Image 1 (tube, rainbow, N blue to C red):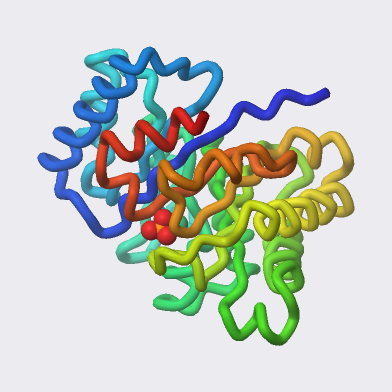
Image 2: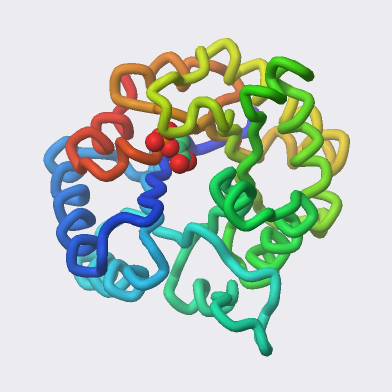
Length: 256
Ligand code: PEP
């Protein structure tokens, strides 16, 4: 039986400057400490804007917080003439554990294809940063193709760009559930997570499939997290809005 340590990841999106980031991380770390959070049993990670990462790293390292952190995106390139991009090697130097790739807001706002998402994930893997590959269907996709078809296809196309080895995390985030207050049911999340795990098995083998963490994201709150975490193929959550409140995010990380 492979141990997949649950991961509760907070995507701050375009919120909090570096001073606000320090305040929120401090409050979150103290709230988790008060609750005697066992970081070895449940990993907690935050994803601030790029400009906050150095401040978060400095604070986490100075205070020896066990909190992890990562970036909301990463370049497919390692260096060169790519104005505005941030390289995975730069994130690695800032001790980022993770980089989110393929969030639906980037797919929508920046036209990112699954192949590009896969190349970004490959760049992260090259530099020892674990990519969190986001996939998910729109409401129209759901009506036309059911829940699993689009996320499975997105994952397949992204994995085609990746080397066979290297840790990845997959986040199933139905687009219709993000920021809508209308979360998927735990059963829906399980059904798609299971299909995604089967896809990983087909592309990367059974061992990789058994050890890869699959998160659910979309209107997760302290009131619904327990149901998701009871599902066998759901190994954590990618949380947007609710991660901006330290007490609520810490309660999600408790999930019992
Ligand atoms: C997200 O942005 O990844 C997300 C899941 O947002 P929310 O939790 O606000 O629905």
